Image 1 (cartoon, rainbow, N blue to C red):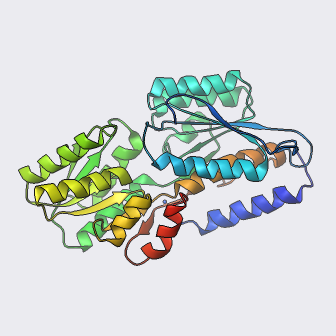
Image 2 (cartoon, rainbow, N blue to C red; image 1 turned 120 degrees about the horizontal axis):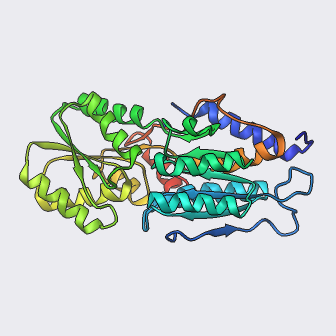
Length: 333
């Protein structure tokens, strides 16, 4: 659809510029809406039409990582005037059902995570077959094309894992455990596999991510059992904080590295309790997913030329934490 909206062009330019600059990185099951601005007629790109975009994720209860995804998505909804309907379920079958619910409610676009592609991918493909534009984000970089999804926004988790392993090797080697908080989640397992590619002496440790006291106890028991471990790699900021406490309780000298960031983890990096974080910039993922669906609906745009638009890896450590901590406190990093 051809439009003459200066707002559309400004947002397109901003998204394109941000994408070039990026480096190659809740309630259970309930839908919540971000209302369209009053009197604005929605995100019709100047044609008066209002659009509704569904965002469906595998968010687990209590995982603060998703607050950043939603913050970015809600800001994009505000900027474009669309109505955002967010829903989540960490069960793959239930997430697929949420996608089907979005199709049945005749939303105009769907942004979906493919942490469990075999279950959720076919539902996303049904949306495309029904004429509803779909973008994938956060999880599913190796699978989105299989379901004819044209755009993906997220980190290359294999490359991010390898980058972490390289840093561990450069720091002197040793032995690492890579803590996986959700069994069978492809992005998490890909991260640990990537670490092992460049830091061979890496052992996976499975924990129950919805029970942080249990996570802390499991990591602590492992550190006591094997004092040769000198690195603990976690795959989310809350688990890094649990690992830091487990290290202290066990009297271990292991260093902590993590994927992803929140305000508390940023402060822990400042205090040298965590060595570094590799950030996939979830705020950007949420923002781009919603904005590009709107641009596709209003102006026929896509981004990436069929390839994933990478939002990471982006390292956060003692060299840049003072600046990044401010953004983390604002829930945008």
